[in-house]
Amino acid sequence: MTIYELDLRPLFVENNVGGVFTPLRDPVRFRQALGDYVLIWLNPETGEYDAGSIDIAPACIRFFCEKYERTLKSVGSGLNGALVPA
Image (cartoon, rainbow, N blue to C red; front, side, top):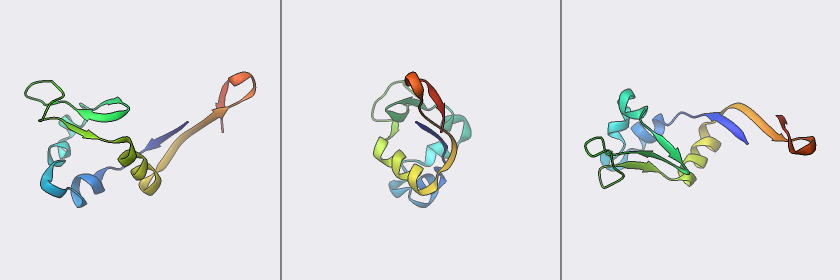
């Protein structure tokens, strides 16, 4: 497992087709992300995952990890299945 610091600015600013990610430029809104396989920002008006929500698919996150990554920590399986720094 690898932990990354990820800069999503290119997605929010440079590749923001249709402006769908514009609300995430607000730091308060951005910090409301939920992560469960995908990154999700619930609709701030309803608090629900609906048409007003924003999500980013795992394939997109992987692309940004590979292109813009800054690795913070890598761990692998060691003896007896323990996690140890790689």
